[in-house]
Image 1 (cartoon, rainbow, N blue to C red):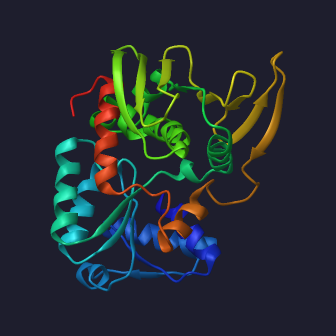
Image 2 (image 1 turned 90 degrees about the horizontal axis):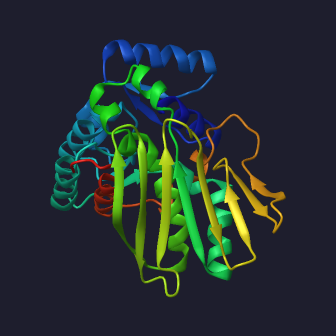
Length: 301
């Protein structure tokens, strides 16, 4: 992800500095930037970087997010965008909340799918026409996850580390109705990768629940389906495309991500972070979302 952020800053003409986590990693990143024609300053003094008052983007391995973010706060960073999920465990998220409060820092968590054209268009539809029903699927390839080179702690909490993208996007679409509260009801989570349940909604008026069902053994898709009323049915499948579904099942594409070399949603996410930060959850909001993720995934906090 660090390379993706570098591409975005370069496209914006935004000067940036890169702090590598290790000497070898820093050298490899410098070589990559030179090969890509991306101009950025490689620095090694952490204290100078973090106490400069500049916004900080933290894009390291999932298992290192907590330690690096905590270190940045202690060394003076006060405006931070940390890649999702911020941390794998609740105790670490609570620690980041504590440090953010102590240092009066603004720590935001990056969920770039919130900034997909499809998700923003879906929110516009919900805002304009209401929401009758919403269903999401966070399919994963369980066999691929097992074979992957990710640390076991990440594999064991894959719902938090990866599936959280689509779960967050689904709840973000629903939240276009206003200030909602979400509660998981009767969740089923089997070790084989079967998940079903209902997310109860408070504050949504007549819209009162979100359903989800996923079987990682057979269904590897991410999808969000919603109805604004009995006749108007929409799908985000894949998530970067918004489709209108007719009464007989025909689909008409409404919007999708434009072709380009940047990671979808990331440019809009960075612009938000450098501006009004609308759409970027605070570390406090994200820690509450983490509780919901653990309930869905059948995980200890």
